[in-house]
Amino acid sequence: MGLFDKKYCSICGEKIGFLGNRKLEDGNLCKTCARKLSPFFSERRHSTVEEIREQLAYREANQGKVAVFHPTRTFNCREYLILDEDKKQLIVTDHRNWKDENPDVVDFADVTGCDIDVAESRREIYRKDANGKSVSYEPKRYEYSYNFNMTIAVNNPYFTEIPLRINDGEIKYRTCAEYRQAEQTASEIRELLLGIRAEHRKTVEAAAAPKKKVVCPYCGATTTPDEKGCCEYCGAPVQ
Image (cartoon, rainbow, N blue to C red):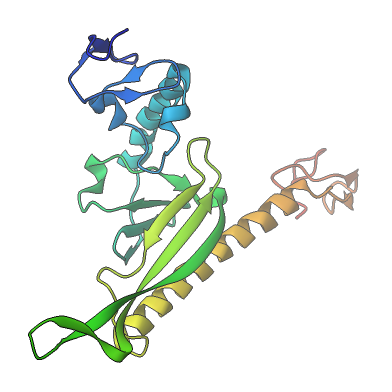
């Protein structure tokens, strides 16, 4: 096929306009379908048509989760980290009207880690010489800025990391209030997410632990309590 041959989306079948093609491993993707993919997905070029179809089905099902997602706590970072503590779920989005954007709903149980990186940037400061030309100071002088970047590791078939910028604007000084606030917020989020992870692991381990036999105080039988903690013979609660 030539460079300027007509191309059609392998997903929806619509004709793809000039410069509108998003290549797949074995097909083509239009901009409309590409916008429906997760914003955290980065392997589009190496994905097959079938894999893209599967992700779009996942994204459609995700809309149902978004519809019943009710925020109970929000961290106003550069993006929004929003929790639904009742359903034990979270979303990260850069849109105020997030329900219209179909953000990926992540179960607390799928959070596997959380890292913080404080990125330092520097820019040289120049002075004007007698001829009005910008020249370096001796020794050179610099101004610095800082950004708190968080990476939330997750267990998801289409992405493994969610990036989150803690501070909105650049922070100029390590000793300023904005730096301390960003540091505090980052630590609070990290402790919260890692605490959630630890709590989930304890729940899984408890569920997997072998149940001990006990004597039912009601019928006197030696029984292994069922999943509700009741005697397997008379149904009375024994836990």
